[in-house]
Amino acid sequence: MVAHVLVVDDEAPLARALQINLEAHGWTVTVAHDGRSALDAVATLHPDVVLLDLGLPDMDGMQVIEGIRGWTSVPIVVLSARQHGEDKVDALDMGADDYVTKPFAMQELLARLRAAVRRSHEPVREAAPVVVGDLVIDFGRKAVSRGGQDVRLTPTEWSFLELLARNLGKLVSREQILREVWGPAYLHESHYLRVYAAQLRRKLEVDPAHPRHLVTSPGLGYLLEP
Image 1 (cartoon, rainbow, N blue to C red):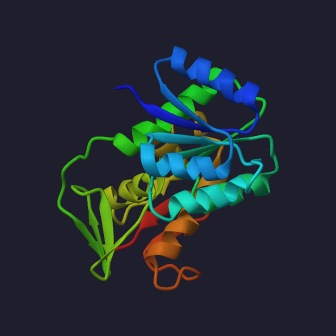
Image 2: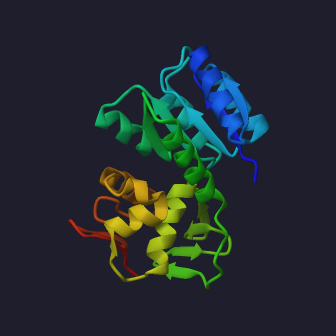
């Protein structure tokens, strides 16, 4: 499968280098140098994944993530020189699927882009929908509804929820979630779990601060209670 990546970076030499490397590895590449052009490209070209720098000339990259997430679940991989943990958490919390810091290894970036696209195109394993309170988790549609209304999830949020739903009532370890949702290279990225669990609770729980269904077992993992 030839995947289409939208590279969003205002540094023209870096954007060009990324384009050359990605095309050499079989990707179709579109380049945008500012936030407005990026939002327009997502809306008109429907790329398979967005590779986004946060330092853009016309708006902050966080605003671009927010704009994209307002209507589509296309995977977003942030590529940024901002290395503070708070920046990573903020980007993931806003709806990014992954975060890579500059300087970076090209092979690692390629692996992360492939993983993001793979999560969004994973074949569905048919199973009966799971009902949890007022939630209906439909594996066939890769969708969840709450009180009869569909809830928009990103591909990564869906993969996290699906893994828990397929193990309903059973504890799923942190290592298993990181391995199956993100991949073996992410086994030490435990902050991803906190961010995505919080996002799912905000979308799915009646009282996110006191979750009834998506439960944390401190130091061990997560489970979805029926």
